[in-house]
Length: 197
Ligand code: ZN
Image (cartoon, helix red, strand yellow):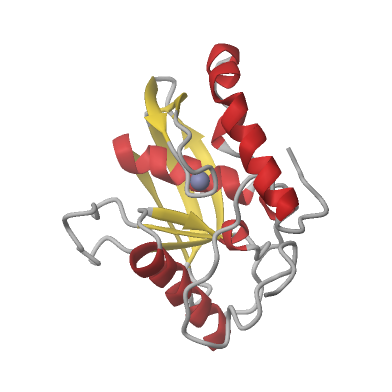
């Protein structure tokens, strides 16, 4: 097995599931590089992110740093649930930016594949105006709202090196701290050398 802190081999050249890194893996806190090359490797990586979400794990959104690849890229599908395997909502966001946000805020419970069995309320703008480029490097943008806006902001945080526990209340943090401590123990036991809390 590759060292736990290493970038996964073949993530952009083979069709495969990728291992989702868990707290406190340092990839969750590293700077993420702008994507400048739009080639078959990038498309393979986007496919692999969806395969990881749908085949090996079960989630609706994933950002590149969550599989140990520190670039500004994220995918999600707001139409998908465990029961509904709808691929029509598959969205790839590369070099995403938030260029506007609502004053209206919305608070809901969030969870994250990098923080198994942890939940916490997070307050976020109800809508965001966003820009990004697609897999061909072509710019696009739109306003998104509600549940999709929450999903976008959660994944966008990952691209910024921010994770949802950074937003939870101090009281909630105290409740989930034992679980975070346990995840850190697991990381160290598996040979992790650079925990980033
Ligand atoms: Zn997450």
